[in-house]
Image 1 (tube, rainbow, N blue to C red):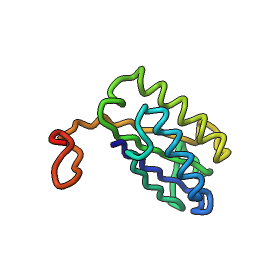
Image 2: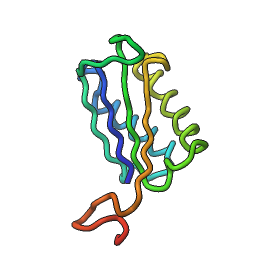
Image 3: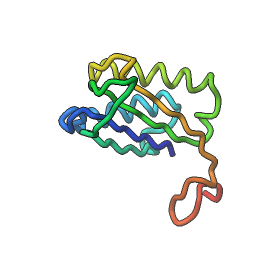
Length: 118
């Protein structure tokens, strides 16, 4: 049940439905999760600054149970997601930041309960 949150100063037109589906596939494959378990929100057109510059940029947050809890795992996830974003959006790696958050099953609600009980 990964959550992907994308924030960017790129315009909404940069994030078509096709792009969202491709990002979902990329992230699901990188994390080893089924696509139908992915949850994604994209917020475009934000005033943003990365590394002292307001040039086009993107911040992506990945929150997931059991797959974002070590540096080695996140290094692999990062490489795959960076490759996708640089190719699809034309951003250089220095204009992209990714945050990884390890979730516990009791921190994710679904179907009126939490994942610990599903």
